[in-house]
Image 1: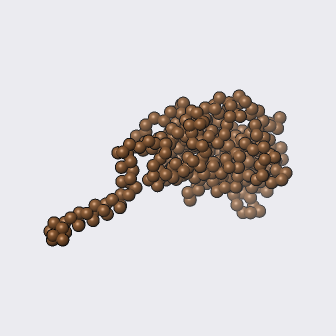
Image 2: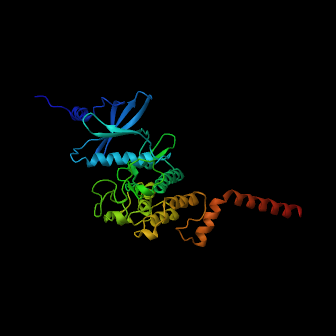
Image 3: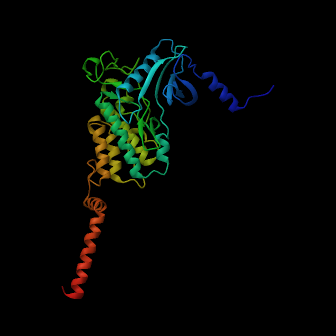
Length: 335
């Protein structure tokens, strides 16, 4: 008897799980990723001569609840037309009944790989700003992400930053009050992101979930719950490691204290102590990058002087040079 190699077994498993795309407009290319209930495939759309990502349900779903969840995820994404959120192109069912949706195929590393690269602190902070701006846009449309983490952010080859995986998204707007939703479109109920997500359900990723989310207090979640997760993502970008349990922000060698203070405020245990929304957090990072005072960090006179010097270094040395030259002229010429 001959034994199959691990590589051969892996190829057989992939072939067995490959979706049958007959009857759809797509041609399968390869598998690119797996999640809890779905597999993502790279496919070609011949009619438009472009590649797309197909997210396909790949677990048993006799009740239809998971299919409903995936369909709702596609509907949420369809409402969020923003450069920082991958657009949805299509949704449908395979011949075997499994639900899928097609979206833009994003090339490039995930945020965790990007943070581990040679990216400078300024580059990482500007990347974080784009993440926060996309989340702020979703909040403005009444949608919480609820699973923000480095693995759910992609960084494209031209600096594009896309927030991915909205499978746990929660809508804060009832259908009757969401005037941005086209007539006839389905909207997530206010109290759920899909089946069985009422009080007591814990959905998210440990270390990135706000305390109220970890406690399963679904009705207490709001924009500040995503702000907590954004603070944890910022910590990861600064430290290149997951945040510690409990949301505490320890000192990190080489990381400026004002940025740690921003993390601490975003990850405060109580919602009222966090930034009011993702836009406020993004604005705080913008202040730091512009050399202005970070509101979360109470400056001493020494820190304020150092910040002002760093911000106006060129002007400072121009003045020093002028004073030295002028003083030399007075000393040697008397005028």
